[in-house]
Amino acid sequence: MTLVFTHLPLKNREELAKLVAEHCAALEQGLKILDQHDGGGKFGPMDLLGVDVQRRLVVIDVSPRQADQLLVEGLAHVSWLWRNRHQIADVVADRQANLVLYPRLILVAPNFSPSFQEAIQGLRFMAIDSFSFRWLEAGGEKGLLLELAFSSWAKEQEKAGLEGPFPFLAEGFVPLNEEEIAAFMKMDSRFTR
Image (cartoon, rainbow, N blue to C red):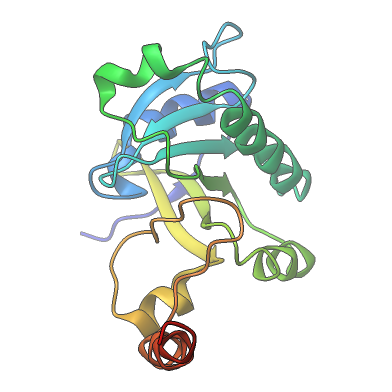
């Protein structure tokens, strides 16, 4: 029997956010949703707020259409969350979120333009993942297909042999490779004698 996949339309952004929340493990193993914006979300206008296995808060913004403005919205949501992290500390404390780590951003849309990907490439100080999605039906079953479209930190992660997002401690933190650490240690030893 051959399965035929049929593209299913989505009514709105809220419907996509609900699907992503239900299937968040397809984005990343261990990702947990803390809040879903339904017009009255506790954490501002972001679509979803999650926490990853490293206990870092994760802003997840979605769009049912190609939407380059999703990047600007997502960055604004991450900025808001970072500035207001002490106000939400009590609310996320039971979820074991580490508010010292700078939040991550995950964007979900059907596709992303080349200029969108170029913009993300320039934002290496922050872990941003973008996923393309398809809402499909096959054999009477519906399913959400999520594929990593582009990541701002995947190359550095691969070079360093790390899994999962880097533990950025603040804006601008960039992990050093072994060569850079050795050069720093050599330079540092000249000043500490």
